[in-house]
Image (cartoon, rainbow, N blue to C red):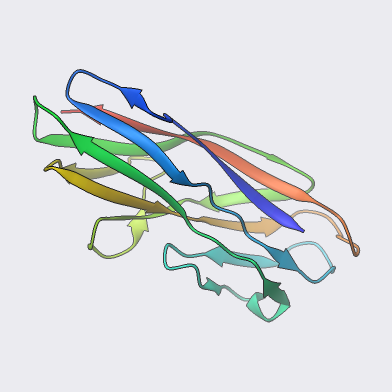
Length: 149
């Protein structure tokens, strides 16, 4: 069982917006196997990557509601403080703002326009760094930060 925990500003009220975690992403269950396998949990809950054939079930992309109440109309959303357990290496954090195309929001983040209620969907791209047998667990976590511009 491989998982991903989204550490986000759950109901964090800022002067200009509120961020609420709706769903925390989870990779679901994959078959045991060798190290260096590659998986991508996309923002539409599909699992792709070179070893996607080892995916079994249970993938759920993360979802946050970002509600603008006042102030600046622009923001940068970034995934940071990435940590892992159980033999995973995070390669990127896929994200999708509202109805836009999937991109990544790690490293330099994603610039967005804030209007009303919008959704941010997140996933995780990773590779395994050790052998995983049946019943092993592993996880990745990261913070989602919304910086007003």
